Image (cartoon, rainbow over all chains, first blue to last red; front, side, top):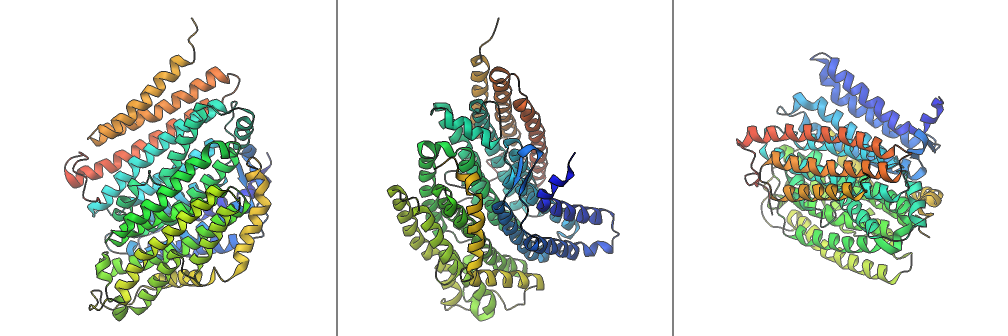
Length: 492
Length: 103
């Protein structure tokens, strides 16, 4: 057997190595040494992230007879997710080291790394068997993570809601895949399915299969009308897990969605799924925005905000070309830093005072100016105010959606633009509560933990610089163009 | 006698529909879990039937089913663990009681 092919799996192998070291250390270290689990995980994962960014971009290759394929864009999205997971780890330290949860901190890191591993498999899978395994490895440990605060009732409620909808959605997905299998000529490879679909005519079974697959993946991405679990799970789960769910998990699912729908179902793009996705995007952006307006709990608010952001991410998918791919990756990258910036502030305040309501943020700038500053930047970036990164990612994703020149997509972008204006209202409500409200601050002045400050600085740096530093987008765009034939050969 | 493929596909579709119906209407978490199992097994049945009837020379559907069964078992184990947590916290597993967080 030729072991050199595993060189293409370098991201997975690095992650697996980190996981094994943390697992063995946490299992066999003595009572005193176990205090070092947190720094060990942070240092190892940080080094792994940096190593993956720096290593020469020669990851191309396929493993397991083409079930696993690594391309330039796959490496990019894995690096982006790594940054997100690292920031989540940083901001979770204070919570996991609190007396209630400290006995289980090893499990927290292990489960988190395992879900990341599942997401890697999802991203690189070019065969539905490997894809389903990756999807389940990514979503099942997340249910255990959602149930992590054993003493809080909300955590259990969130976990049961998450696991039930996750299993329901994977059952729907598998039903859809069985239909796809029936149409595919006996193979579950994406490329074989694409060829089989290109040579056959449209049928009711195919439409049914597409709808089932869209629904199954839509649950993971919390697209409307499959978003009903989102707010409850985000509110009940521990804040570190919520930020992980809303950013890293969503980014991986979005990329996998893109690969499946362009590479595998590309032949029926114009006939079938463009219109399904069109309707879903409009519903997602609008409903997410309308419900976000009436939320008072910050975590619920971020949940609906992330529903609406998922709609914007899907604009890159509906474009179905290399520009769409590049702008979607860039959007995810910017979304990672902006959303995690907001969550870093929320979790810092929750860890310190236990307060989560938007009303508690009133007058925050008097007691905690730096936190208010970071939160404001994050909100501006999420709303897309120049010159922050969110503005550029929105411009690029709108450009991508109109790049095919279809009139219908221009209309879609118009609707998305109107929704951006609506979203300004509720994002600025938070800013208004913090800076303009004349009330005395509810939250006393305090100094956040060192790790939280590092996480915040990383996010703020990302928000300020990602839009202005063009090599990032340039690199993503070059990677997408070099992968274009594999992904979009079937569409155009 | 040779049974046509429809004799398997229609029951599988019915099983899936029963699962969806049970998932929506049942009030007990264990009953919901059973409904989910019905849905997953319907998908497995579809895979096996398509493989046997349409592509008898290959094994991909069968292998997928084996993996899907293992995944379903993992899902059930995790769901039951969480249900036990709910039972410890609430004293029952009726979903009408698990409504602390809503709009």
